[in-house]
Image (tube, rainbow, N blue to C red; front, side, top):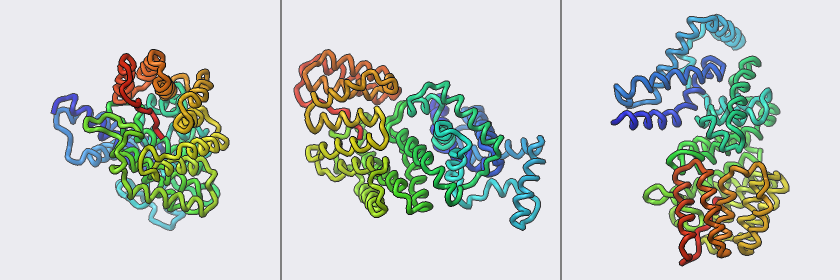
Length: 432
């Protein structure tokens, strides 16, 4: 294995293991910022040693062992140990347990779900909503500051500041590392759902890198969503989010070609859609209806996804119904991104001219200024209207904005195709 292969392997392992690593350490030291520092120490050790020794058989366990050693050494060296002993002593005393903490046992104890604790800790009310999202994406999703900025359509320095301030605020407030109960849980639920879905989306359509999909992120988000649904079974929006993720995840195998190239929704082989995940998603949507939560943002998005899942072929898709659902969604959560998707649905239901009117109204929207999907959609509609030179410019602009290599390749292919007379119906960039 070359040095570059090893570094790619380290990066891959980090993306998979970092959240569990930080969560396990946070349970030990009760400080997510400190936990991330120890996890980063383990990552640096891997970068130093693995190119020489090779990637270990159990890289996650290796990283945890190194991080655990660093954490214990640090706690023993500094005043933190004394403070931690005091904190743990009070906690154990309250529980009428023994007074001496066992740090190794604390770290190795896998009772409960550390990832879930980490989500709720990062989403504590002492933080702003934006800070909760950024911090949890960093800690749970293992995303870089740049990737979070892309996912959230905000400048990178803004995200970096949010993360630093969030960790400092949690430490100063001594926020407990635990899953909240009762009314406090409900208070934090909305931002938790938002964070989980952003993680899922980063796995479903990666904003950067060579791969369009990151299945591990989707699996983590689905797992967290299902756990949440078990914890709060009477919350319709939790089931709505689970339904949405289940149905979207059902298309994963059909979304990539043999060489890893993206296959857009209308060109996908629907026989490759996972029927079990669709059934799970539709069942979750039934639970939403039973709870009377059909008008929730996630429930509406799940209903849109269900329209696609129920269509046996792309031609059978009920686009008018989808456009109506997007209109309802826009009333509940007004957003230029929702309006952009509504424009796509209108174009599919009523023709490209109708869709273009909606899309063009978004041209000056600041939030979409660097969002590649806007010129991508506009290019597609211009292509369908026979305005090929304008379409080429839009596809080239979209390619310059995306950070994902697979998506850039697809957009450049479509830009190149604009130089030739179309021989058939063009590909649609629909990404519902």
